[in-house]
Image (cartoon, rainbow, N blue to C red):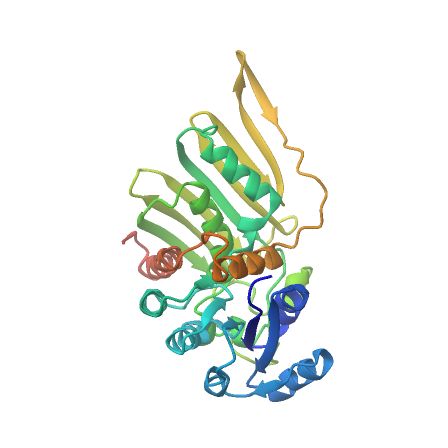
Length: 354
């Protein structure tokens, strides 16, 4: 076994407890040694439950703990880049929840800090680790889709606003609504499948029509802390169009609340040899063979793959030198450039060049 890695966590809210905690506890090469949360009682409770020795309410104090090798950041979006840059400068490897940052400038600061420190910086892209995603990526890399020239992706919720009135719906803290919350997942997946072409222009529109609803039909609305009478100054629906340097294009659509039949995710890609759709995680491929149109559905098995945990495991493999990173900081910079330009386009009512 490689060296046991000591982990410090900044932010112990729902995303950490639901998606990060168990994978870290179960990893044989990781030991959680410190928790930090501005709500100190929340961190103290978790520390007692899992015999974690150090608790802090200020992340600077955590970073001064010299035994810590890695930091996991699960704070509100505004603080991702601030904590990441400080942790990298303190000589820690960094794993950060998405989105990478709330502005392109801050995303670039993170990338620069990682390059200067020589430490690993990685931001959550759990959907890359779904069995369907892993299969489709290999299918594409084998050349079986040909030239992928256009696609569309999205995540639509009927009623699924997270932490209404809290930091999720406060632009200063979150950077935006479903575009930055959900868009980062499926735009990333689409762009990764397409070979990470350089984005050159975007056109976007945003809407806020359901700020007054109290209904929820989505398990995802559990994230964040709701606040009665709090702020709601972000969108609940975003649509858009991305152009890439190689001529490819991507349509996008993301909502926390809209009048659709039911919540669902989708990714569709169209190539010169085949097309692919991944709807609610079910992968189908469409092409032609022996003079006939054919539909293919890979048999991917029924294993209980937890993609958040799979990404955390990959991060450890990279830190330990066993794997090359599936995600590099430039991917994060490109992503935040796209999302920021989408918001600028929506505000201006015109296409924005990157």
